[in-house]
Structures are given as C-alpha cells and as structure tokens.
Length: 209
Image 1: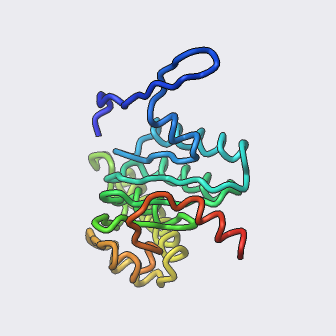
Image 2: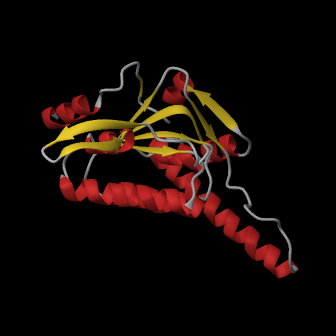
C-alpha cells in the first residue's frame, strides 16, 4: 500500500466550529484500527501506541483490528503480538483480502477471528530478510537464529489453532494458502462474516458468558 495515498476526510461540526478529521480518526473512536500494508517497525509502533491508548481508555471494551497485509518484519510483528496478548481488552481480528506470513500470525492470534467471504490466509516458514553472506560462522549463526524464529512462530500457530507442531511445520514448509472455509477448518479463523458491525456483539457475548 502506497504511503502517498490520501486518507479521506470528513467535516464535523463541533462547539468550536467545523473541523476536518480523517476517517481513520473517526474509526479509532469506535476502537477500530488497521494493519494494512507491509509490516514495518514504524507501522507496528503506531499500532502498539493505539492499542496501549485504547487499553487505557477502557480495559474491558473490545478492539477490532482489520488486517490486509503481505507480512514483513518478524521481530516487529512479534512485538505487536506480545502487546495483543498483554492488554486486557478483547481483540477481534478481521481478515480483509489476504493476511500472509507475519500478518497471518497476528490475525490468527485474535480472541475472535473473522474473515470476509473472499479473504485468504497464507502461512510459511520465516524467510531470510537479507542477502546471506559473510563467513561460515556468520552464516551458521544466521541459520540457527532462523530456526529459533521458526520454532517461535510454529509454537504460536500451534497454540492458536490446536494443531500439533508437526502439522504446523508440514504446512509452513511451503507457501500454504487457505480460503475462508479452509481457514476455519484448520483452526486459523472462527467465522465468515458478511457484516462488519460485530464488535458490539462480541462484547455482549463476553458479558453473557
């Protein structure tokens, strides 16, 4: 997603007069945020700040994260994953388009995981983000770090899907795509939705239970 795309604005009337606000600001007030585009440190830091703020505003009220991303930096993605698990707010993730690689990990870790009918999830093993080079020892160290990351990601997938680590590794050995129905069958998602106003229902269900 290009960073130069203009975010639509709306005009609101306030006690101080008229003011322009972005649609993202309006949706943020509804506790709806976006993880769209490549997963980078800057994008993840912004999402972490938003989650921390919403947690402070109301630690019990649900937050919805819309995800449409090809993935990106594993370390940044894991930082967001840790924050999602550390805050008290229930987190609903919604897959829009495709949640791939690290974005798939963030999607499947939601407390309620919804997919639009034509959304997809893609899993694969962590990849080397830089050109492999250097001494034999450096390459060996890089390989060991990559395998550690593979184990971390594999355990997260297994925890949130109910699959064994062996099953997970078999799927992540190559690019594995899941449509909405396949995602539910494999434990990656909970529901296929055709309406977006579901956060309130999630809170009501939580209260009843």
